[in-house]
Length: 298
Ligand SMILES: Cc1cc2nc3c(=O)[nH]c(=O)nc-3n(C[C@H](O)[C@H](O)[C@H](O)COP(=O)(O)O)c2cc1C
Image 1: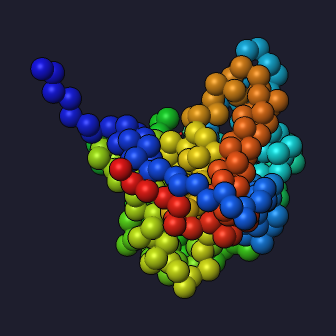
Image 2: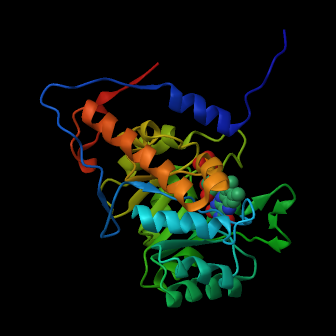
């Protein structure tokens, strides 16, 4: 019989999420309200777009996929994220009017890091941050499309936080140790993520979420989770396990490629409807009320 080793963190994550089940609590329950507040601003739901990069325009349409999903974030009134890009592309995303957090790569050229943060702030970004899980690569430090990455110390991260008035969000936190360091340096948010499986056997973000939540319980820090979020049920589980919001990622790609902005708006509506349905069925009428008491593992 063939023997397959399960080293793919995406597969492990999916299996873990599917092993979490939900009980029903119908009596005295009412239709839930999925609106939420993140970083002091109101949004239609605790669902975010992913920090994506390098999306071309699809099906001959004029705008790049990055602009199309940003427009969908604006129309849906959710918080938007974007990843590695030059300043001219970031300006186009800001021009969509979406409230956007710019996640900057840990470039070895620290002047570029600081320039991109400063540009983002001056252009009107909602927040800035860095994906610290893209530091290392197979040959030591990673090289992404010809650009070298470099290690980031607590002091460097603290200096980014201190250089801005915007919320600073660290993306790629997958341990209590890093989560506590983020709190210490004054980050306003973390994204619990394995960046679509960069680390073999990475612990599923939702598995480590309760430990991170517990460690940060007295800190003013927003906890976001991503990796494998593809439905309202996934968002519900993330919130129940301690996240304040969850980011969809590759699951939105088919809608984005096929139908652009309207496709993503519809996809997000579906996620929101399922989240509302499950909250209503489990007796949680508000996002802030959700806890893990309706979850089972099998
Ligand atoms: C095409 C593509 C580009 C991405 N670019 C970035 C990036 O520039 N910066 C970043 O922090 N994450 C980037 N990511 C990672 C996503 O933000 C996210 O962490 C990852 O896809 C896991 O979520 P998912 O399983 O829902 O896709 C990228 C992912 C994809 C698929």
